[in-house]
Image (cartoon, rainbow, N blue to C red; front, side, top):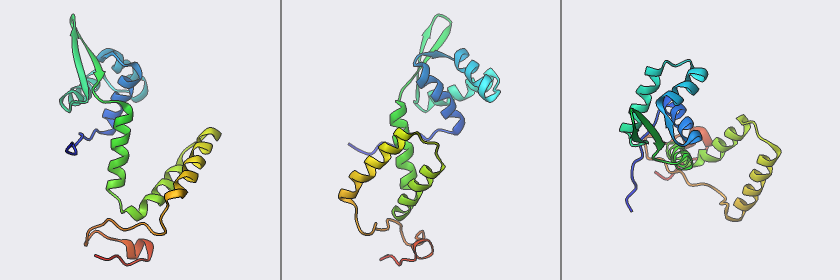
Length: 153
């Protein structure tokens, strides 16, 4: 199966999608109410973002009477996975560990979250490598500066 490009969505579009994911079937009026309280957006602003998400294939629409009902065309989990893959694709593979550590350091975590992370790290030890290979191309590699290492480009 070819690797299908998923559309990127803006931070504002994420706000709309979060409402749709939470409410599952929703009208533009309902989305507007949530985001008017949170972001101080006018209904026209929200409708603009809804229209963009429909064009990107992120939202399905169904006409019921004189209203449109919106549902997510993609799951929140799928969208988060795409976001994560994009993040790791855009940085040197040697920087992934530091990036994950920075994300954890910046996050507010529960004791259960920390226990889950400890379990994942314990499992990761089984297939850990001594050194992560650089995946940069010549002209983009900063391993010498960032990691004190020369790459084989």
